[in-house]
Each structure stands twice: as C-alpha cells, then as structure tokens.
Image (cartoon, rainbow, N blue to C red):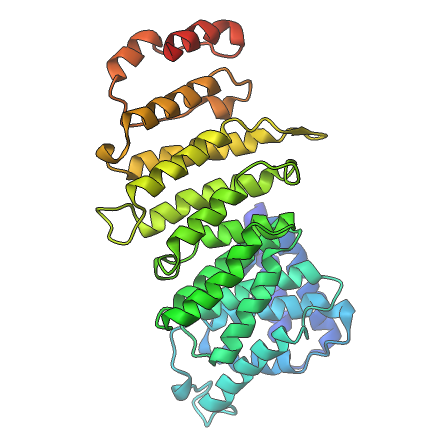
Length: 403
C-alpha cells in the first residue's frame, strides 16, 4: 500500500469516527488529534480534501462547535479541526433560507443556522477559541475560517466584520510567519468582500489603521502589515495611494534603529511591486502610479541593492537585494518603456551589474527588459556556459559594463 493511499484511508477512518453519533466525545477528540497530526506532517490541504462538505454536515458541525467547552484547553485540537471543517462547509453556494438537512422537517431553520454561524464569529472574537495550548494553530484556523467565509460571500453584520478585521490586525503582528501569511490572505478576502461598497470615509479610516504599523517600532508588525498592504484590493489602495507608497518606501529604508530588520525591508520592497501591479501604472491605468512616483519607487529598489547588513545569521541583506531584484523585474515588465528615463535605466543597470559579482547565486540571475543597448551588452557578456562563480571571472566584465 502506497503512502498516499495509506494516508487517505486513515483520514477517512478518523472522519467516520467523528461523524458517528453514538461515540463518546473523548473518542472523537482522539480522532481530531490524529487529523491534526496528519495535517501537520502532510499539510492542511491533504486533510481538507477528504473532509465532507455537504449541506447536511452544517447542522451537526454547528451543534458540535456550540457544545465545546472553551475552558478545556487540552482539547484545542478538536476546536481547531471543527473550525477548519466548518470553513470548508460554509464555502458551499447554498442559501441558508432554504437550508434543509434531510427530507423531513429540518431541526435547524435557515435563520437559526445563520445565527449559529454569526455567534461562532462572535465567540472567536471574544477569544473563546484562542486561549489554548495551541494558540498559533488556533489563530491559523481562525484565519482560514474568516477567509473561507468571506470568499463565500456569507452575510455578516458590519460590527462582526469590523471586529474580525481588528483580530486579524493582531495576527499580522504575530511572531509566527504561518500565522502572518494566513492573516494576510484572510484580510485580503475580508476587505475585498465586505468593504467594496463602503464610503470613502470608512475606507480611509481602516486604511489608516494599517499605515502606521508599516513604520512602527515593532518589527513583526512591519513585516506582516507591509505584505498586507501590498495585497489590498485596488479600491482601497487608491483611496490614499501616495501615502501608501510613502509609508512602504520609509519602511524599506535602513536606519540605525532598524538596521537588523531585513525582513521588514524585504517585505516593503515586495509590497511596493504588488501595489504597482494592483493599481496599475498611469497613463494606461487611470488613478494608478504616475511617472514621478514610479521613478521614486525605482530609486527605493536601487537603494535596496546596497543592503549588505550582517548579523549572527550571516548576510541578511541578501534577502533585501533579492527582493529588490525581483521587484525591479516585475515593474519593468509592467511599465511602458517611455515612462522609464535613460538615467533611471542606467542606474538600474549599474546596480544589477554589481549583483553579477555576488557569491549568492539567486542574486546573480536578473532579467531586465527595456535595454536600448541590448546588442552592445550581448557583445560584452559571452553566451553560456559562463562561469561567474568568483570575482576573478566576472570583474573584468563588470568593469566593461560600468564604463
């Protein structure tokens, strides 16, 4: 029996144990623990593929979740599994007003089901399912739940949505990168679904909650909120686009206080390229990034090439330089050639050419379009195979490119 079929068989067995009505909750908790361990080793999606997601599963899931005792912290795996399972079920495109779990009269009417789900949202926000030994795992489950509920367009009260967004902002400052990534996806889905038709005043108010965090004194808050800003939908970014770009450019700068915060600078550069991609570049995209602002963003990327910060981990500035390389490639591919001035392209080429002497290979593989002297460049650099593993092989080439 292959590993895949063995894993699938075990998952199905555990799910059947959980769905068995006559079994004790203690036995079901053991099954939930086993599912959690499988998802931890094989990945969440491996388990999610086999979770039943029929309309008939909604009612027992809600009852099971409602009967959980949040005071029993040792059973957080059950809380975690129920939230993840519920997040999959609520993605089904059924109308709760026509909710029926059997051919006979349903135990729970549509309004009651909606109330149960809404109450679950409130319980989450009141930290009913957060205070446990698996705090970070519960936060990830909550983020999945919010993301899937938002993607399904589930009707929620504005007060619940606002409190959800506040909870996700806390997750963006988490020290766990998995929690941050889950929160970023959840924030994007939540804002995209429930804030699209909000007035400008409310959009501006919520955007102002994220902007100060990008330049805060908390490194993790910078890391999470920078990428969150880059992932925001266009209708929110255009509310205050110059301020968004200014804050991200400030986050990308090296200061005495933020010298060791290479991760936040890396994410700021990545977010700048995402913002430009999302809102577009003028004049092809009205309301997008103008030529002057675009040149300033390129200057920020060029400054990123000079980040050679070193700490106990080694050359941590390498991730900033790599992000600058990738971001420049993205922007030059999406920009019209006439928007990029010759002096700007010359500065970019000098910065990129310098990276050809890097010992880290991923920083030596840039691809920059819109080069007017492409044939001259090809005459200087010989075709592959080309050995640029050391300074000896590439220094002469770099000197020719510089002059």
